[in-house]
Length: 107
Image (cartoon, rainbow, N blue to C red; front, side, top):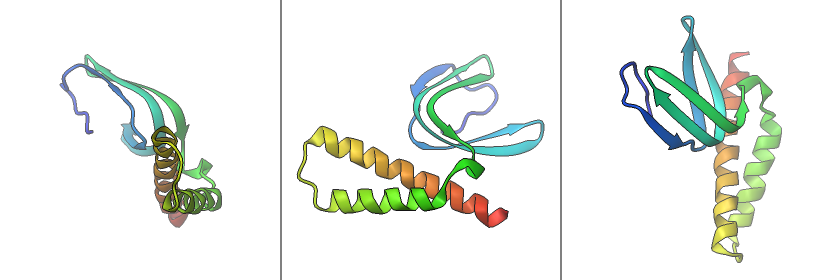
């Protein structure tokens, strides 16, 4: 979702992904997951359960988490609710890897 000046007011559930924002002419990115976003009067408020700057991401740990979860999902035999939790975990690890790897390539 892209939010530009004049965007209609809204409250929405925050999905796992990259939050990109501009502050004083500088672009920043965060890995976010869970929580809510509110847009009101050209102001955006984000309440995230997880928020990480790229330099805070342990790429090796994210890679291990992705590999472990992919293996777990490839031979799934649990409940649908547990499957959704594992799928969300995989999604978080993939986004963390993308953002963390991109950040370490710049350094």
